[in-house]
Image 1 (cartoon, rainbow, N blue to C red):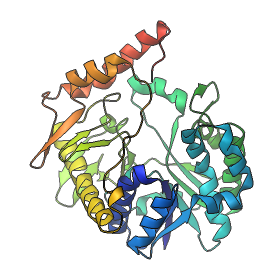
Image 2 (spheres, rainbow, N blue to C red):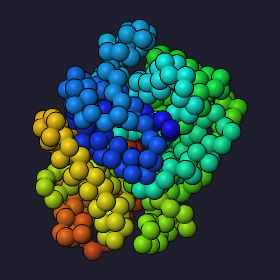
Image 3 (cartoon, rainbow, N blue to C red):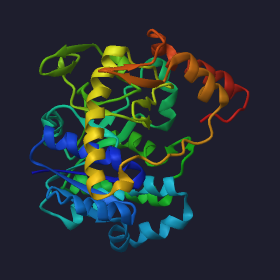
Image 4 (tube, rainbow, N blue to C red):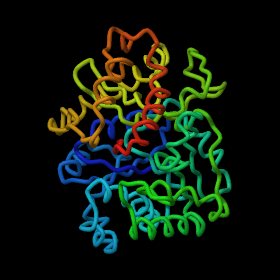
Length: 354
């Protein structure tokens, strides 16, 4: 069995279950461990009755890790959730020595083909990480980290556990939602891993953690057997900032990076929509309150970004048959460059930009 872990609460239950539905298709041996961040999610996952979808309540993790629980009053909820990132896989590797390799996944990922290439890259290493792979115009975002926390592999070895121990200690000491020279939340700590973790590999597979911030780096082929990225299969896509707005309307979350061309977004997001639909039906059967995602705060955002640029570049899409339409005739692919330019201008004037 290949073991994976994630965490979510009722607000992210819909993408969380969609992740599982995609994973069980891509990897029939998969076991997904869910850290449930509220009692409703714990009860709902249990009611699904899926043997390889295993749930652990947050209270159980906190009881096993008192230092984690003690950190909770010192930070906001989102900062506390960031703090969970190293503590959760560390708990599983300690409590379940039968897990040889554990792959951490953000709940807003989905698998499109076998994860075998990930494990082939891990090979005899203890830790696997994935770079953001920003294009040049997005390089300033590396102030938040060169590597993405969304997908990480840890071997249940001295090296893998040692990496988690060190990461946990740093996050318990400081894990805040602001950028400082050498740290940002749970993520920027990964910048130092290549120099500290002896048996670490950085994934070079272009189809692993393809995301809104790096899709523009690659060429694509649409084949009967699936989408190919630079000649290799798309393995897993990161649907960061994606929001369901209605029965056939979504916020792509791509405004700050560059909005995908019509055919590419319709292929990737169209398949994701099917998993979301299936997840909605399953939650409707056991926990109707989890059928739709609750509103998720995205922080204070400048008017020029939330209104003017969204109108100009069409980051909100409507589903028409198999297509996700923005109605901007491809103009949206330049949105990331424009936002990056405006960010530099606005920051120079001292405006806080989020």
